[in-house]
Amino acid sequence: MEVLGQPPPMELIALDFGGTVDTLKFNREDHRRAWESTSVAAEEALVLVRAGIANGDPAEVGRGASISALAAQSVLPKNELPEVMDFADRMGAVGVNVAHSGTVIGILLDARQRRGLSVYKQAQRTFPQAESMQHFRLLAGGIRRVDGNS
Image (spheres, rainbow, N blue to C red):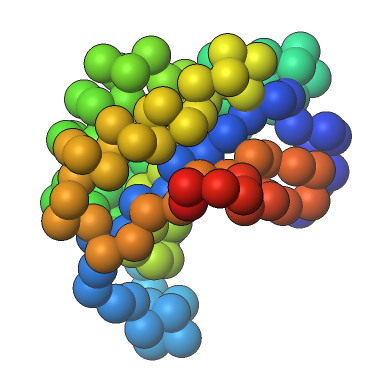
């Protein structure tokens, strides 16, 4: 564990396509071999996230998160991840992230561009099959739901 510092200004569109993961059971299982196979990608992701936070650069954080999300596919696949990544790229998002022991996929945005609400609305149209979708602002120590249409 390490303190990385204040996050750069970012927004997150969180999509949950359903399903469940029994986190207690998942964490009791030995995923060491699968995680070890991602160690190079995980180190690259961590370097980018650290740099992004140190430099206040959402794009670096997003690249690191995307690398981590792809690596996590070998441990807990998200079938919709390729489609969400393609959407994120088309929308000019800085990256994607995933719940490493859950079902959520996030689209990461540079909050300085102030496009979160429009991307959120486009995501609603693009992913009607999502069981839930929420729009957040990333804050030091967590997230805050954006009031309004989310």
